[in-house]
Length: 308
Image (tube, rainbow, N blue to C red):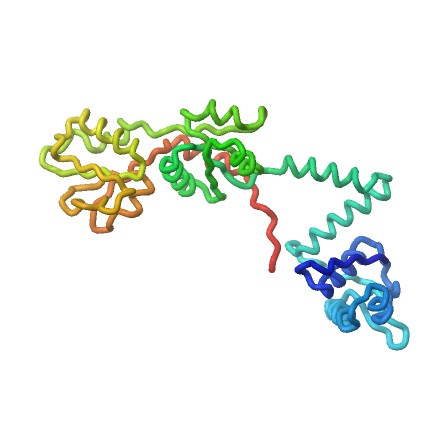
């Protein structure tokens, strides 16, 4: 049986020895009933402290991997214990078994590593990646995506280098106006999900006809939202003097809300409107896009997590 020890690793030498013995037993490199090197022999051969080897062997005995026979040494037990399915060693066992099978069939280790790297490049995505250069719009849409799905959501601008780093194992998502720009920066066959924006007229329907005596505030951290809201509300018949517009990026953006019948806000800004004020949340993403995100969510798998 061969051992390798990484002395600069954050994993202790004792843990390294323990894991290697377990994997050797599980992969069949050592057989049930086989005698292992003595504590003194291992310590001398690999320049380990005898206490390190003894501690690893004691744990292996406690967990029923090994047994001590007085005057004879340390031996592999005939019946190895079962590993929990979510144990890191269970995954290591599968990997060790793969390399062993490849070796028995004559595949060089480097060929196995190369194929594994290629295979990992095609692993299922683990997150959504919103591609949007406008920082404030990106924050709003990212917040709405997080409400719609439970899997992680990241966002990035149209910087080619940053996008290349962030796109690994992600489903790229973009708004209609940026589809062509994002497509140029992604690999030719990469998936790209285009989200649709909610129709302003349908969002505004509940407010029509326009009240004549109510003050309505509009707040957003995205300047385009304020411009769109102004145009839509005025076109719908709201008197200009009844409208307050507040840029949520400014310090005094909540000024005058106490006099407003309601505050119209984007999804992100709505979270910061005082609770005493009636807030009307105007989502940017359409309901069909939210459902599309949920459908795509089924393709995303969380990464393997090990217990600490």
